[in-house]
Image (cartoon, rainbow, N blue to C red; front, top):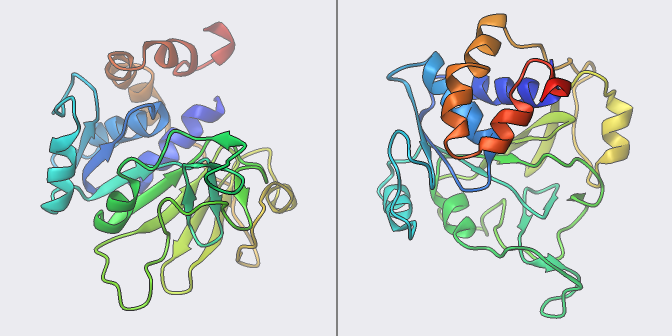
Length: 244
């Protein structure tokens, strides 16, 4: 079992009976998870993959996506960040003091609107390192917590990486370590994470997915993912990734 499939199945478990799940562009792992959850929970989880030609394609401009969010018709959305800090603030602008950032990211685009309006926002970032998970982001392009007195319909609920999963408490504004993926200890996660986080006395290991889930993921779901992410499906959605 490769790590991609472990993470995809973990995300799919989080999306059971989740309603309408939207996934932005350049997000093959969340897209695979949403499509798998749709297969596992027909009628109760629906995957909408942006710039995809399956299920319910969005208009090229993305305006339909934001209309749906504003109307309350999206229940879950995935967002990543060039930097993520312990209060779930995202930086998609750049590293260093703005506007003279020494490294630039793609930009905020619609993340401030999405993180405020979608009830459940799952943060996903494959890289788990102090470079990405920082004590404080250099620029807040999307705030994890609203300012006092500001109403928000939604916000971050979880953070999943290639090494671990965290739950986010909107009341305290802190992450709690939920599980570590096989091959990574709690000490590993502490060393790889730039911000402080809470953890229970005993942190479980992320469980392997049931074999029927892997069967779906490596067959019908893989075919769906290949319509938008052919290289990802060919190279990483296989039982033995070394055979790709």
